[in-house]
Length: 480
Image 1 (cartoon, rainbow, N blue to C red):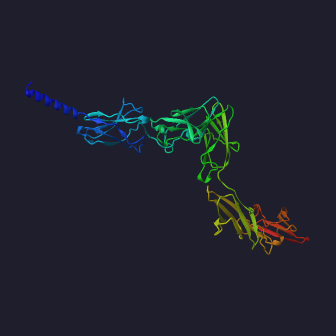
Image 2: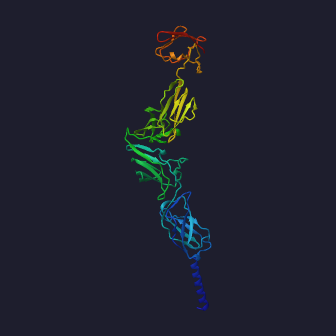
Image 3: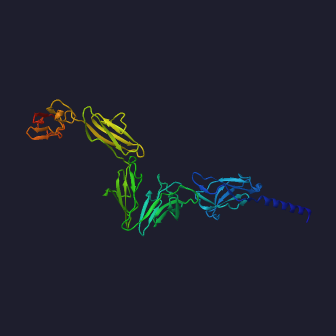
């Protein structure tokens, strides 16, 4: 072989070696900068760090790719979740920031790094949990009714409420989500029961469901429902008040609800409430309420003594009181209100400065005291009483009255010596001689009833007989 041939072969070998060297790259195992991926619409940013060698082997057209396995760690049907811009990563080590797809849901995902120029693939990363929390707020089951019952040898179906709305962001709006049902074993512990969007219950207990986000913490969980077994032909359940018991009536009515059933009938104080045949009954009145529920094969009943938060207030005055000129008397309120406030009124006008539990009455008129509870449920009660002038000391026996309701001369008012005196008889007769009034305890209150004006101005006669038999006689003309 000639010298030229030997040199040519040597150069060709060197060129082949150089080409082979340029075409090769080694990518190290991805180093995850997170232990688990709990992504959501508001957070989905994760980092992975990797090395490659040699740096000089990377082409200006090269792209690095992140490939995601399935939830078991297999890359047989992998998904590309990131691709770098051509030539953007040229120095090792490198860090890539990426996001997970909204379909991830499992405990054993892996990723690996690929390059395009030259073509190379890293080993896979360590396995990690990854979930995308499409729904992350509490939701309802059983229409938020906290109790349910089933007949012996039967079952009760718990389901996630759907569709979602302003008050219930149902996870069923997202078909990719899965669910895990639990039965409480204590206030802080629970046993896993089954997967699925519904649960058929045949064992008494308190149940709830969570959206399956694995080891990721989440607020996507349901209300608790206590399920009980009812023997055929009887049994009992309970009634819940949406505003609690007692509830604050000033905040509006409360909703009484019972277990799910086929039909319902509500009662108050043992009397059937017409048309109250739904699972929920709304009221703002206190009292004893009960319901009978047909579960289909058996019935259950429940009752509740509902307290609407009202309190009692009483006053130590009669409904009608009399007051002599110059006299006074004290009226005091007794109340169950917490931190009460008081306001006194005379003839519908607030009395300035009257803000204590007692008030000294010195004027005639219509009184009212309002007691307001200022702690807890803010409610107000009102008590009323009337104060009239006792017996005005007129000098003469009048012979004219005008009972027209204007408060002036409406009744026959006679001198005080003849009033409220058991030793004095007052006799009033009409013009035909018929007795209209005969009393030994006259109260200045005649006529108490309306007078039939058959004539223009009826005429009546009076005879006042005092102790010893002396009499006063005269007429009374009644004007319209």
